[in-house]
Amino acid sequence: MPTIDEIRESLAAQIWSQVAVDAVIAAKAEKRALKGETLNVYSLDLAPRSGYREDCNQENLDAFVSNLLEKVLSENRTIRIQLAVQTSTHWTAIDLEISPSAIKLLNIDAAGEMFAAEIVALLYAKLIERYADPTQSRFYYLIHDLIDNEKVQGIQYDSESCSRFALDTLFHLSHLESFRSLEAHEPHLEEVPYKSTERILNASNMPPEFAFIYKNTQSTTSLNSLPERLRSQTINSKNQTLNAAANTHTKQVKIKGRLKQANAAIDHKKIGYVEDVEHFLFRHTDFEERIRMRNILEALGHPDFLRPIQSEQKSALESKSAFFETHNTTAEQPPTSQNSNPLDLK
Image 1 (cartoon, rainbow, N blue to C red):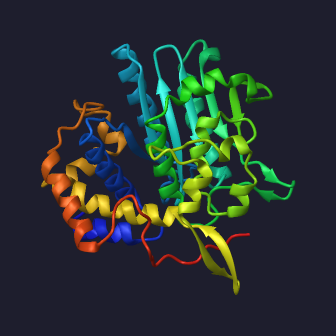
Image 2: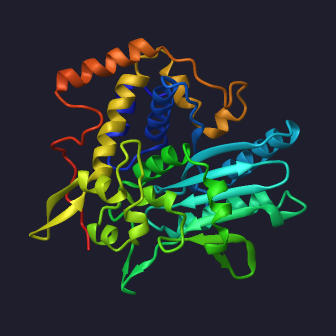
Image 3: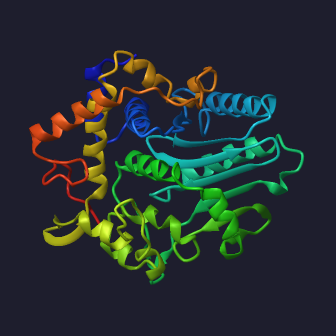
């Protein structure tokens, strides 16, 4: 298992490894436990293995499908989890609810990465082939609209923040009854020709409660092009609308010699996630085990899978409070400065 220094090094990198992602998820789980909440977010590494002719890690894919279905069918239960899925150096977000009778899968990819979409489609196909009647299952996925038929109405425009986008999306989805919302809104979603169980959502047709997906969009042009019903939607516990939340993190950056407005929310997220690892995870002597158990392939075989975490509330809060007093900042405010590179937006 990695040492504290190795974990810190992985978190300092621009592109996060599975160790960094698992550490952030483990820290968030500890933070949620202070509120009496359980976080069922995990990682799954499907990146192709070196030396193998494969589009994805077939061994991990088969192990995940077999172990998850065995648990669901043998225990006759419904399981809902969120997954940060690594498909190369790229990360994509999956919300998954699986029962003995149906599969419901939602894929949100901030970058609209097509290779990642193909891997997620393969995962869905592997799961659904085990069901005699697939008609009750659903595969929902985000397809980015175009702005004036030219520019992509995207979320991620850089090449290194995909893990943070995926994590933030998953942490929000864990609080949302996403499949109930999607099912109620299904008449407005686009059905995929010849694929009766698949539905496309985008900014034009998605339920308004999914507006939060765009709060980290790095392009103010993309944000301003969204429908008013999304921009005016309340998206967080502060009762901020999408517009207000994004404006909190908007700053001027120099791009190709010109000053432009850009949303730096995802950079602020990275800083906050690293701080959480320091103050909610590293205080535990068994932090390595807590990180390891955020790998879904490890977690599925553990007796504590999906059980609430027992956390020591007072010591965690005192540690976090002491940090912010020392650094004269708060967790709710964006940092006043950062070391990230300017965004190359169009």
